[in-house]
Length: 121
Image (cartoon, rainbow, N blue to C red; front, side, top):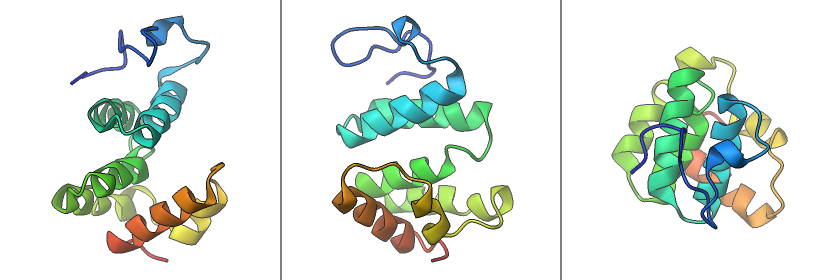
């Protein structure tokens, strides 16, 4: 499992440093989603944990979703507990409005996962 964003290979063998992604925050968000949506959970978790370390609170929702996707409920709840302090106004409904998801079914599954993690509707 990768432990940082540097040198992490993308599908097709390209390294993240060779992509047009401009900074670690953007890379964490974009690659995190790509890895999660393609089932590369180990890479996704590494990217998102690093992203959250560099930009506290920004990766928390995605980390919760990754752990929910992999059935790691205990981990999902552990990260869910950090969210109210980091983003006190967070609601699933408001979060959903910010998502650019081409697959409405995926967005619905993500909303259900966040609800199962007991985040506010």
